[in-house]
Image 1 (cartoon, rainbow, N blue to C red):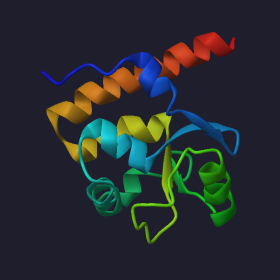
Image 2: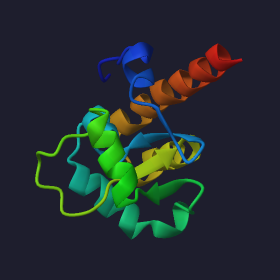
Image 3: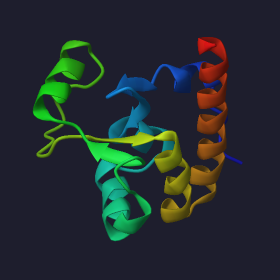
Image 4: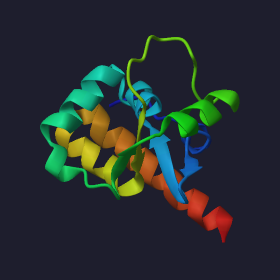
Length: 121
């Protein structure tokens, strides 16, 4: 069984962009223990499962703002703008990554989203 990730740790990775709670592809890749490139390849192969309300690509302005807020790094050699996933998109990721870790991490992420929603009320 994969190591449990504290809900608080996951909650710190949930951002609000365009009025939606989302997580960066790179943060999700770390949690799933896969490379960001692999995560995005699986999404690209299953694009029909990820409509715009499940996943979207950040603009250059949004990416620069996140970098200025220390949410992302200039390092790492990214050649494209990051993708972000809504709660529904994250739920869909476990089906395309198809690993025990993805299933367990997704359950933890869903709990973090739920806890954050309760805290916002």
